[in-house]
Amino acid sequence: MRRERLKAAVHVHSDWSYDGKWPLKTLAVEFNRRGYRIIMTAEHDRGFTQPRFERYREACAQASTDRMLIIPGIEYSDASNIVHILVWGSARFLGERVPTGRLLETVTTENGVAVLAHPSRLNAWNVFNPAWKTGLTGLELWNRKSDGWAPSQTVFPLPKELDLVAFAGIDFHDRRQFFPLSMTLNGKATITEESVLDSLRSRQWQACAFGVSLSGNMILRALSALRAIERKRRLLARIYRWYK
Image (cartoon, rainbow, N blue to C red):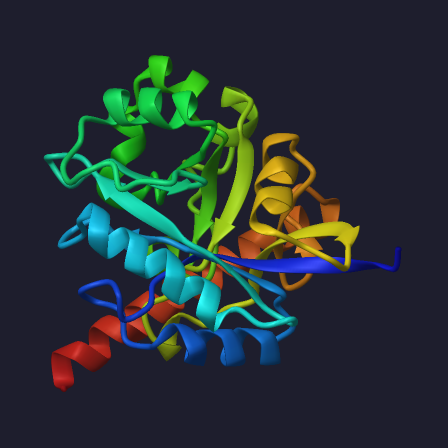
């Protein structure tokens, strides 16, 4: 079987989310044009029901092509809207404002994949419960929307300390969030939802930025420069908003 380097866009919102902008089919075209073969969506739980989730799964299947697999997922929020968990592999909708501990217990029972989203947003990592670790597969080391053009310095050591898979999440809502973050795998050319999730569970995927592993020396040397660029970008954005 021919092998290729698979590139996945993780944490993507379509217009099935209340704040998403693009239809699934448009996402499939645009991400594939940028070299991705997989989109792992993470629609907000708000407004979903089990019937709507079933329709959504079917829509993801219909929007997938032989060059792009769309894996349906939900971003679950706790009652305080501080802790967000990305879930893939569950055949049912698990509800809104579900307590994180109970959510992770259910995902574990159903053999799903759960990832702690943007832990630097609202300092969610401060309320991390060690008991959650057994229900989590990974943690977003870098979230494009929350962290910007560089990963959070506070969060960077957490995946290794917690023994979780480091994830690079785009948190895509519209064109402004395009950024060269991905999860990559040297895998088979034929892919399915279950094969992707199995390889995530077995830690075969790597978080990458600009095509380079976030655990590699090259990206580690570049982090200080990226953070300096991000500080300048945020400053310019504040100035722009002030004078707009």
